[in-house]
Image (cartoon, rainbow, N blue to C red):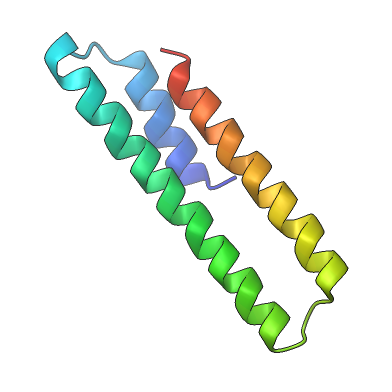
Length: 79
């Protein structure tokens, strides 16, 4: 997992956030994590297109990447 994102999520979870700003900040954090995961998937697509990895490896890595997205979202939802 990207340590910078994890640190930002931990800071978010440990801070006192006004209720009016909470939903905006959650959406912003989820967008950041989704962008990071989407970039990883694009990189996997590029590797597949360049035949650097096989289709089976691609499928396994995308599953792992989607699991990582879920872990980020669970960290965000802890608050």
